[in-house]
Amino acid sequence: MAALVLVLVAGTVGYLVLGFDFLDAVYQTVVTISTVGYAPPHALHGGGKVFTIFLILVGVGTALYSFTAVLEILIEGHMRDLVRRRSMERSIARMSGHVVVCGWGRVGREVARFLAAAGQEVVVVDRDAARTEEVPYAFVTGDATEDDTLLQAGVARAAALVAALDTDADNLFVTVACRAMRPDLNIIARARSESSEPKLVRAGANRVVNPQQLGGDRMASFVTQPHVVDFIDVVMHDGTLEFRLEEMPVSPTSPLSGSTLRSVRLHDRTGALVLAVRRPDGSFDTNPSPELTIEAGDVLIGVGTAAQLDALARFTAQP
Image (cartoon, rainbow, N blue to C red; front, top):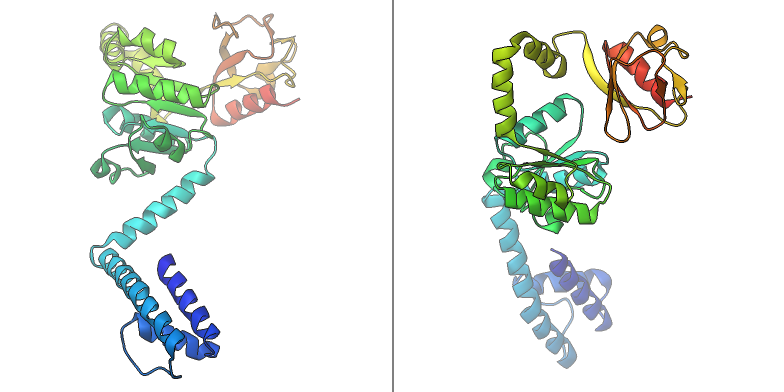
């Protein structure tokens, strides 16, 4: 279409130079490249005939190509897909702090579903166009191991990336590529074999998850502690109970920074219970004492209602 517009503009300018007025110049250009063949509004002499010959050779081909492309899009139903793809690209371009999920298999589907249910924006990447058509979230059809595909998914502005592709080699490649582009990106990678887990960590993954191992541990837990597992599932995933488990990082501006839990009367002021405190070195203080001193950079793991946890989150972040 841009080429067709360019030909129309060039033809109009050419006829204006040959002495046509504007309307006659546009008219002569249109009838020439459309092969209608009406008589020109003004007589054409040597220069005008040469220019018209050139315009026919260039313009007719451009017009036929443009009309053919438009008809193909309309007839084959590609217009809706084109509009949808452009809309998706604009939507992803506006996202920031979202999660990129690489792979729309069983694991990727569950990850995206849980994140969406938690109110997190998700962009799914998969090379199979048939599978991405089923994605109810923003998606990019392409190879997740390619840098261009990851950039289209907005990895430069994402808060986290989940590598849940079919093979450990692909997940390793995605992890290396993303870590090179975003040293600060939170990367969670899937591993099928135990031998791949340390490789993914060395490649830059913050966390490595082995679904087979987790599935086995979960099945064993149902044998030994079925009620505990059911309770944790309901609190973390189901949403039917009033209580929730959440994590809240302590900011330097929080009144908790440098104070004890007792001194700030945390439970009295928020109603939430602090089950554990994770230190910056990765260690946990479980069932913390009221005399435990909290420092900036610690992460509180609390339990309570949504309102209580919101109050706790505000308390850990604001002065």
